[in-house]
Image (cartoon, rainbow, N blue to C red; front, side):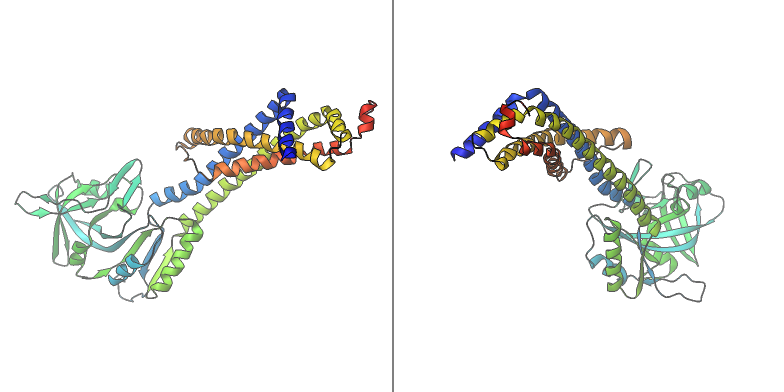
Length: 395
């Protein structure tokens, strides 16, 4: 116990003796910790951000009929497959929609004649709270909307009309539309949608039940679209498990989304990792240069310690403890500043503030302590100091 008290007392004295030089080392470690924490927080946040942002684009997994018919009719599958998908364990924030596609004649009061259009019957079968599609700053929900009352007192469900289809039919919000196919007819109220830049711009989306009645295909669907959150390996694992659970359907992913997500994240992650390593290396070199000067100035102190019976191992332990404490102080202060820096960088560079990730803080502090201890390597030169040469003034 007395030795331990003396050990920490000497460590405190070491901090007081050369405050200016140690402050420079502390600033170097703090700056390195700040940059390391900022880069690591951006890297960890990028993985979550990319996964979330790519899900905004919608479908990345499709469940389609496996059989292909020789007839002109498009293949369909039983709606029981949707029940299997709904009951299958899925990653968090996964959404799925049953779809039935057909071509029907569409007419309205604003159009002089009927026009052929693609009708997409949709029903949400898996949803994390609400299924929301965000595109070009516009948010809409695909959940059912309260039906409106027509001029003759009829209750008409809304049908979401794509941007191009609405222009072709000269539709306004609330216009009555009539969908006809092989003598069957469905009426609805137009709800024009903003331009999305995909095939939905030319489609008219209605409830799945109405589409099944219009196509005379009760209990049948064309395919199931899923938006699965997660990393590419997690999505591939989910696809394999779902395909094994539903052998009668073709389960596959849309590679253009998963591959693009993988490439973008690998590039961002590689760049941030390389920059982090460079920052840590430069921090170690700066601290090592300062530690070299510290070692030169402490030869007399080490000689005196050895002369009064101090072991070389115990003397080096003093300086390593000093370096570790400097790394701890620089890491605690710098890592907190770095996380705040990453939030500002994310908002300035990417337009979205990075979320602080708790795992980054202890990792950054630990890396800073490790760099400080490694940078104390020049202090090993003090082990070769001879007390006699110090007292003769030869050291």
